[in-house]
Image 1: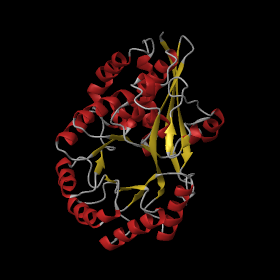
Image 2: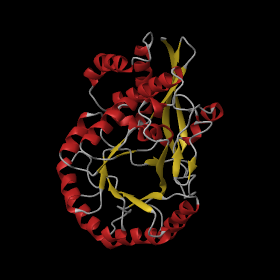
Image 3: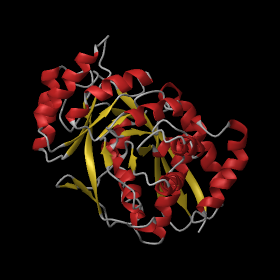
Image 4: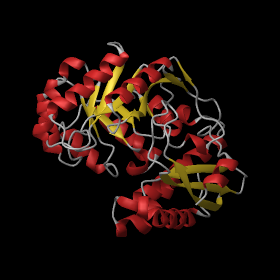
Amino acid sequence: MKITGYEATIVNLPEDDPLANTEARGGALRPVVILRLRTDSGVEGIGVTFYGAALTGSLHLAVEGLAALTVGEDPLRIENILAKLHGGVGDSCGPGGIFMLALSAIDIALWDIKGKALDQPLWKLLGGHRDRVATYASGSLRRNLTDDQAQRAAQILVQKGFREMKTQMALPGDPTPADEIRRMRVVREAIGPDIKLMCDINQRWRPEQAIDIGSRVEDIGLFWLEDVTTADDYQGLARVTAALKTPVAGGEYLYGIAPFRQMIEARSVDIVMIDIARVGGVTSWMKVAGMAEAFNLPVVSHVMPEILVHVVAACPNGLTVEYMPWMLKLYEETPAIEDGEIVLPDKPGLGLKFDEKAVAAFKA
């Protein structure tokens, strides 16, 4: 089997919240680059990447440039292709940024091809540790909501059967610690004591703020505090992690494999969060998961649950999948949720097919 061609397309997906229907930014769009990688056997693999923002056009060109280098290669020799792309491009332009984002789309598509060629779903190819994975609702309990809006949204998520969900602190404006703590209590009161509640800070606190406010909300029983300070401040993160009883999660902002070594060896986090677009695709995601397992640390996903459910299910230290429905509109069908868990698909590869009507409607 050989790769014979490719097609990369920019689509602008609406920024909405289908989980709790909270108010989104009016008319805001999220640009995404989708990839189709074709072979001489008729098998086609699909990939997705984003984070290009105003540089999405450049990301699109980068995906096309890397895809062109795969033509003529055997798609089942994934590490061989990745070595070619790193050697031919990555060594010149660096290990992060747009190169890594573009590489991820290629890698995801290659694994989709491999699964289809071998007639196996990706999660089984990668290890198949479990066939159902816990998931948490994300993106609904945003920091810009009022307390009443956050409370109603949280209750809707519980009614929909979610047993885990994530909210945010680092509220807009100039909030006091009391303001932050009040919001957390409002959400906890809305969902009761048994729902697992995570909280994302999105790198907006200094380490001393994270220790101060984090210690004041420990009685609320958070499942984790996420990205409490600058992602590459490994020592600052380690200070926070050592000071708090609440587990600290982080890693979504890291590019490639090497930074995870620094983060894990510094004991910066209790839970390793891996973003598939930034880390370099399925191949690198699983390598970081193995690294974390060696340190007795669980791993969790970041966005794209329709793809990430495969990798979290595959590894023994996979903890839960972030159910962030940013890209669900791209596909004809995505994995079902039952009793707060995502059920792994039996279809080969990713088990996903682009919804051509949606692609046409959202095409840039």
